[in-house]
Length: 112
Image 1 (cartoon, rainbow, N blue to C red):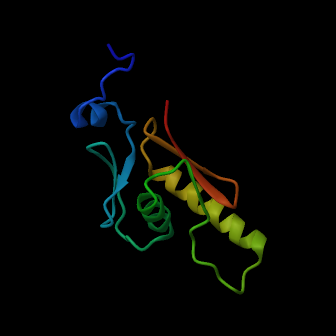
Image 2 (image 1 turned 180 degrees about the vertical axis):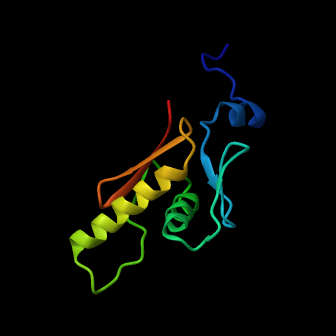
């Protein structure tokens, strides 16, 4: 008799997979089936962050995805990223998702 457990079926594996956000590319940010927020300007800086997370499969962190402005200093670019993350946190429902930035990367987590 084998000492290993049988592999879960695809349905069981999907049920046990951690829930992840989803960016629909049209302005909707979802957590599972729940629409958290609709952004009216899908090209806004917040949307760039969500689109990058979505494209990469929602890793725990991403490098700064915002377009760089050759006329701004590195510190200005870092502050722009931090401010963009602060702005998006103002519109995400409390108790759903958390985002933070150290000025070089953006991190997300499920809220407790």
